[in-house]
Amino acid sequence: MTRPLRLATYNVEWFNALFDDHGRMLDDHAPSSRYKLSRGEQLAALAIVFTALDADGVMIIEAPDTNGKRSTARALETFAKAAGLRAHRALIGYPSDTEQEIAFLYDPDRLTARHDPQGAPSTSHGSHEAPRFDTTFRYDLDADNISETIRFSKPPFELAVTTAEGVKLRLIGVHAKSKNPYGAVGREAQIRLSIENRRKQLAQCLWLRQRVEAHLAQGDSLIVMGDFNDGPGIDEFEKLFGHSGVEIVLGTTPDPALTLSDPHAAMALQRRVGLAPTTARFYIAPQKRFFEALLDFVMVSPDLAAQQPKWRIWHPFNDPGVMDVPELREALLQASDHFPVTIDLPFGVLPSRV
Image (cartoon, rainbow, N blue to C red; front, side):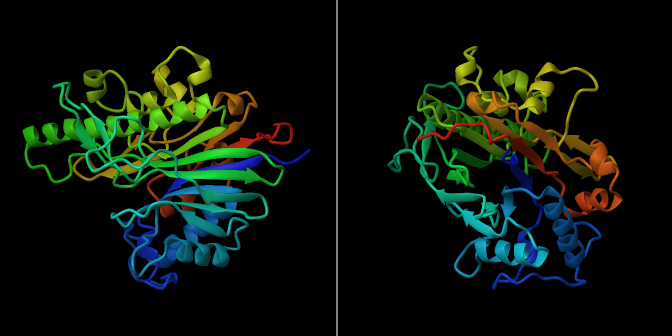
């Protein structure tokens, strides 16, 4: 039987700071942007993590920058070669202005992949009907009967992927807007900016949900993966708006044919004490403690969910398989403030779509 296809999503903090403008790794003793860690140490930790994942394709969130001087693909392919990874070819979609790209690092012997954006470009005025992700969406954010314009700072990365067995997939890599009130001074300003950012994050998820529904209507095998900066029950503003952005993308309809699946999101939605998976770990300086959250997801369409794939969060303290390998456990803590999420798909029995 054909071995399962493994896909991963991984937000790598400060990946861009580990390369120069020529895509060469800064494998040295100079400080990285990770606390008390050198660039060489972070690169070594990332090599251990990517090697352990052994994924056929990794959706990298906060990948190295692409601009007039820098190339995401060049940097990632240099890293993959140095680490000896099977997944050694890199693609990006629309570059962002944030020095954080969404990229796909994959094994060309197992997959063919191409950037394949959907939707028509909108005018500068914007469109209410799921325009192309590098253009403008219109949505009434504050229920005043006036629609605002919404843009992605990091446009979702839409991929058409075909496996070596001929299975066709649609992948969408996502890095939704953070709800944190960066730059706000004072409690009232922080609350006001948090609410504004929450509205924008939800609008982005509604835009993404329109695209999801279009793919499901076409019968596409769809995977939506990445960092949503959001999750069920993650903050006090969810009651104000009714749903988290993650719930919106998964689908709030009772029709299972129109609903995406992610078991970690489902556990969070049940809100049972002790059943709260997490994918990210941040240090909160004022409180001198770590905070964990479920921010990273791999959502699949009903046809893929029916194949009973296996999801895994590579958490250094909650995954026994990781705990048993001290080198990997420490590498996960050093490499990033997020942990990878993988899905294994048993494509030996899944029919090809035309």
